[in-house]
Length: 243
Image 1: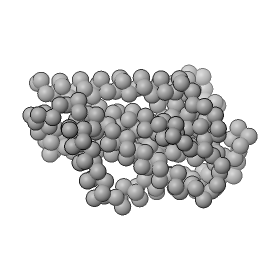
Image 2: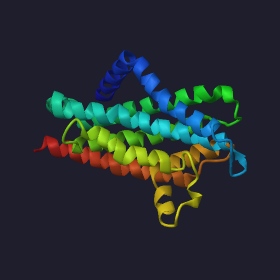
Image 3: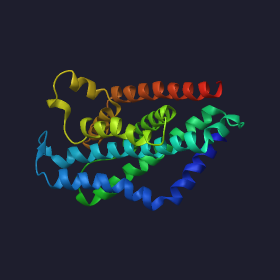
Image 4: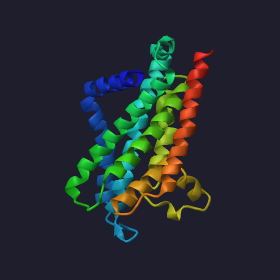
């Protein structure tokens, strides 16, 4: 019941701000498609650059959509509205509250990714997106929604949420196999970037889009991130409850 309650809250928020959320999900990816995809006429790995770019932008959209859906709202609720304190004294199990937030954030990320897929339909790129693509998008969203939840517990002020976006989301957006391949990066940096969750999600969605299979290693890496971040989120919230 606690999970459904949190998801209902996210649904009400989504309906209320539908236009704002949709426009926010469209603007940056659309600009990237126009500037990088149509403004730079080139190839990548022997294929049109758009074949490389579109899966990367879809993965990036799920990341930013999921992260932004949780980070700022949870920071405000915890620091100013004191809503988290009310949850702690309510009969709602805290793990259900956490799971509801993560699922709600991931669904918001999937919506953002779906908007990009609709925008790219007229391009007729020939790329394939199927149920496995959606699974990767959902898993990627859960990772970044959980990361946002953890960081919201670390926030000291309302201004910290945008800073987290600048420190974490923006660098990964450009480095993690989204706009350009990591193959040309220096050794060490290339291996580090390849292990980041967005790199894995981009690689898997791109493989599926080109008719290949998503490697099990990618699912393992995303699963490991989800497990570690989930344990951190549980630790933070139960630690606060027991203070």
